[in-house]
Length: 70
Image (cartoon, rainbow, N blue to C red; front, side, top):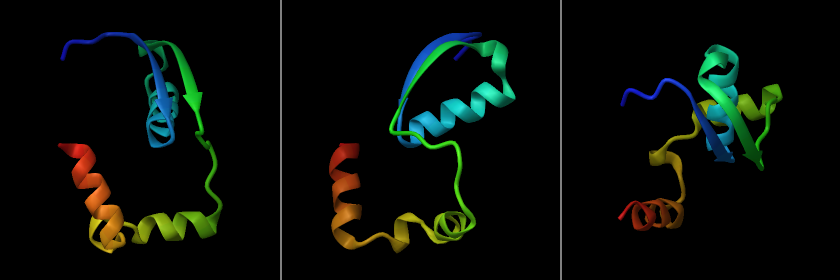
């Protein structure tokens, strides 16, 4: 996309993505706003996240995501 640097706002997972970018490519981010974002996952949460996928989500959650994607 050719974006060298930017300002951004990230909510939840979007904020975690911004945090990752800020630590791996700090010169690209001019400023950021993080909403409902965590910077730390305890071991228990990491184990849950490793098992999580679209296929393991409850049917109603998958349907919600599909609706939002339209």
